[in-house]
Image (cartoon, rainbow, N blue to C red; front, side, top):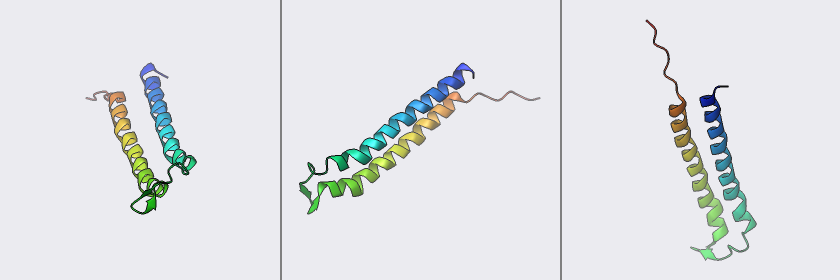
Length: 85
C-alpha cells in the first residue's frame, strides 16, 4: 500500500472511531444517568426529552459530520487520472 493510501485509511479509521465513540456516548450515557436527570421540562422528564429529541439530533449531526469529513478526505486523496491522447 502506498503511503498516501495508508494515510487516507488511517484518517478514515480515526474519524470512524471518534464518531462511534460519540454515538456510544449519545446512546448510553443519558440512559446510565437517567435517574439524575429526573427534573421535568415542559411537564415531561428530561430523560424523555433527551431520548426523543436530543439523541435524534445528535445522531443526525454524527451522520452530517461523517459525510462532510469523508468528502474532504476523498477529495484530498483523489489522484488526477492520467491524460489519454
